[in-house]
Image (cartoon, rainbow, N blue to C red; front, side, top):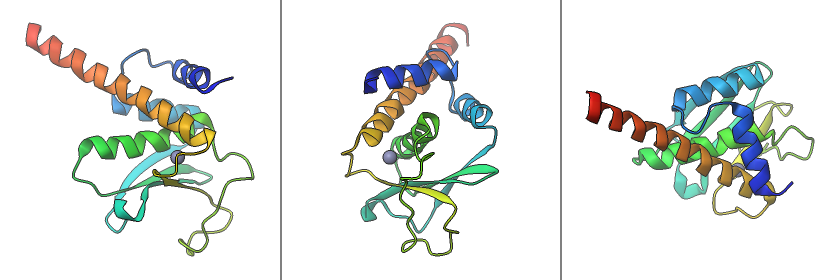
Length: 154
Ligand SMILES: [Zn+2]
C-alpha cells in the first residue's frame, strides 16, 4: 500500500466523515485504542530544540506532550502529527527508539516516540505528516461549515 492509500484507509477507518471537530477526533482515537488520550503543553519543551511533540504510549492511556507555541495552527499541527502516529499504529513494534538519555525518569518499558520535524525522512514520518494534513483539513472543513451555517441561520 502506498502512503496515499494508507492515509485514505486510516481516515475512513475513523468513520468521522469528511469534516469533524477536534474533540470528535480525540473521541474516535480513544475508542479505537480503548484508552484515554491526554494532550498537555510542556513549558520547557521548545521548538528550537527541534522537538515539537512526544507521544508516550502507556498501558492505560496515551499522552501527547507538545511544545509551547504562540501559533494555534502550529500547535494543532504538532498534535495532529502525533495523533497520526497513534492512528497509523506506529511504534507498536519493537524497533521504536527509546530516548533514555533525554528523559531518564521515564521507565524503559514505556514506549516513546520523539518527533523531530526537520527529520521527515522515513516513510512513517511522511505518512504521519500526510495524515496530519488530512485531519487538519477535516477540522478546517468543519469550522468552515459551522461559520457558513451561522452566517445563514445565525
Ligand atoms: Zn513523527
